Image (cartoon, rainbow, N blue to C red):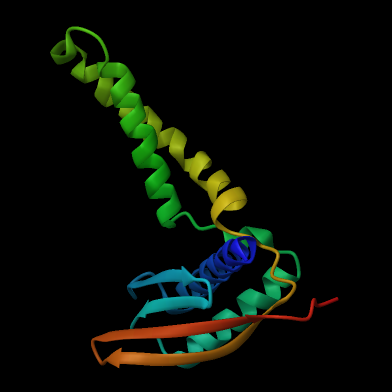
Length: 166
């Protein structure tokens, strides 16, 4: 059961990235939106038309199922921010260890900066192998529902697992 839970979350995370990536290309960067994956699907928060979400999610799923695995990865993912924070924290901890901490502050800042730069590819690797799964061969979109107020719109994209597509 635990493996199914994690697999479902990773697959939905990948589909969320694909959907938001395609939506961003269609509606532009001026529309603020954010996604959140769950074990039953994912949410898209933002003032985006339901039909645009339906089209992007359907296309994203089809393209992931066709092998476009890079759609599962996003430079804007929270995984990247978490990896950068952890790496910067560890770099500062190492740089400030020992005596003369005050004099080591510039070294700690430089170490944190380098860690954040290095975190870019590391975050992408973490997404690829830990937080997303581009294998959506048995995933389908069950339904999309819109909720919220005119200023706070959210869409729930529900997914289902079942027959493996050939």
